[in-house]
Image (cartoon, rainbow over all chains, first blue to last red; front, side):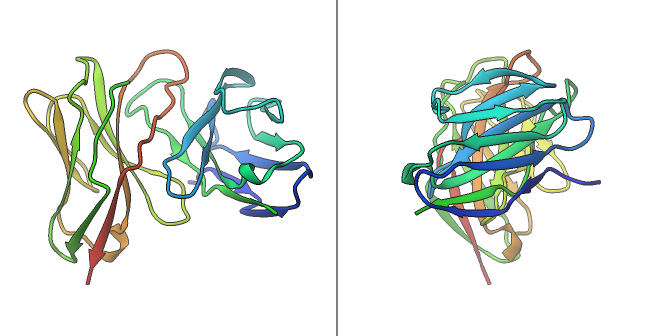
Length: 115
Length: 113
């Protein structure tokens, strides 16, 4: 049983650069989430996909952020023109459609540091 | 989703039961109580959830008061690997839509040898 995987695990970049993260959900999970977690805080929701459709976006997701899930499997999160405030852990989660216990399975996260 | 209140930190001796409280006084009748935990540098991990009956699984027990305004997560024999931040989340389950999780700051549980 492979869980949710995320790559890279760590990314250091300079301010103004673009970065892209990848999430591979558990196979057969058609729902996928991105969260962001800053130091000392709980994760905050960014966006949600059902299959390839992006159905909900948080206002935290500024226009510098874009997420895709082109074939309803893996997803990418891109941040353009990174700022120091983007430094955070970016978490991906997936869950199957319907059924109990209706939980989300999280990946290990990608830690972004913007210098 | 109803708001939850948890103590910021707790300590427990290894081998003893760890009891983590959560207040959710504004919970609605169709809202479930979920518990997740986050071990350092890892993603959150689902532990258990319940509606109004007490629940038990291989990881923990969940005790929900009769008025459902508070609950307690019990780790019956805490080990050093249970050191983590524990999040209590209240939300409606099984409906359409994103069903995103709204995390508070949780309780930082430290298990001491």
